[in-house]
Image (cartoon, one colour):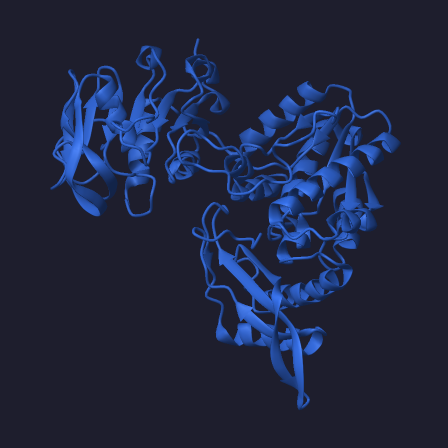
Length: 517
C-alpha cells in the first residue's frame, strides 16, 4: 500500500546548473508539496531511494550538444516516475529518447506568447494563450516517438510536449519565474494532478516529522548547540528542545564580533523566554588575536570557523559527555557552499556547512537543513515563538568581521557597532525593519576629507546596506526614504567618533552579494 502521508509526497528537482533551480523547489513547496534539489550527478540508486512521486529536470546554461554537457543517468526513464523537463530538461529528454535538438536560428530570451493546443495534463485550467518566459538557444526540431506537441510560440513550434501514457512532460519556457504569471499552476498540475501529491505538507507536518526524527537520531544522548541568537539558531534550539528537552545545552560563544549588547540580549531571551539551558563563553580575545592582520574575506571566514570549532570543543567538554552538535544550517547555505554539476560555483564558504574538521567527534543534528529562511520563520511561528525573535534580520556567522573591510581591530569593531546600532534603530523607528531583509552598516577601508567645527577632518567612511529579499538567494537594494537615510547619516556622523562620511549601497544580488565579504 502506498504511503500517502504529506512527508512521503516528494518531488525531486534534478539540477543541471540553472540559476532558477532554487525557484523551482520553492514554487513546489509553496503549494504544500515537499521538494528537494539534487545534483544531476547523483546517480540512479540515490534518485530511487529518495522516494519521489515525480522528478523535475531543471534548465542549464549548457547546450545538449556541448562537450561535457550534463546527461541523465543510464536507465533514468526505467524508473517509471512522472517527469517534467524545463528548458534544458526538455532538450535532454528529446535527445535521450531519439528526438532532434538543433541550434535555434534566433535565441529566444524574454517574454513570449504561448499558444496551448492541448490542456489535458500540464495546462489544465489555463487559457488558450499564456504569457511565458523563455531563455534558450537550442530548440526542438523533431519530437521523440510517442510524444505530441501541446503548445507553441512564434519561435518554438514545439514549446511543450508530452507522452501522457508514460507521464513524461516537457516545456521550453520557465514556469518557476515571476515572468510566467501562471507558471505555478503548471507546476501544481504536475505535482498534484500528474504525480498525485495532495499538497498537505505544512510546517506543522514538518515539525511533527522532524521532532520524531531527532528523538530517533539522538536517543538518550546529549546535544550541544552553538547559539548566535539569530532566527536560525533560535528555531533550531526550540525544535531540538521540543524533541529532547534538557538533553540539549546551548552554548553562546561571544567571539567579540557580535552587535552591540547582543550577547546579553541572547542570554536573557533564552533564559527568560525560551527556558532553554544556555551558557556563555567570552572568547573575544581569542578570536581577535587569531584575526590580527587578516584582510582576505575567505581567510577571515575560515579562521573564525576553525577557531569557533576549537573553542566550542573545549567548552563542550566542560558540559560533560556530549555526542551531538545541533546547527541551524539552512538550504541556501548548502546550495551556495556545495557546487552542483554545471556552472553553479561556490560563491563563499559558510561558517556552518562544509569544512568541519575530522577531529570534531560530534554527530550533527541539522533540523533546518532543507528549509529556506522564510520557512524557518513559519516554523518558529508554528512553535509559538515570540515574533520579536522570529523576525530578527539575518546576521552572518562570522559577524562584524565581514562587515569590516580590511583589518579587524577592537577600535574598528567598536566604531562599526555604534554605527550599526544607529542603522537598526532608525530602520525600526521608521517602521521598515520587517519590510527589508537586512539593514546594516559596513566599515570601509578608506578615509575622506571633511569639515567639522570649522576644522579639517580626515576620517572613516561607513556604507549603509539595506536589501529586500524573500529567501536571501537573490536580493534588491531597498528604496529607503531619503529622510530615513538622512537621519541615519546625520546620527552616525555626529554620534560615532571617527566617521565623517556615510554612503548608501545601491547594488543588488546578483551581481553583488548581500554581505560585502
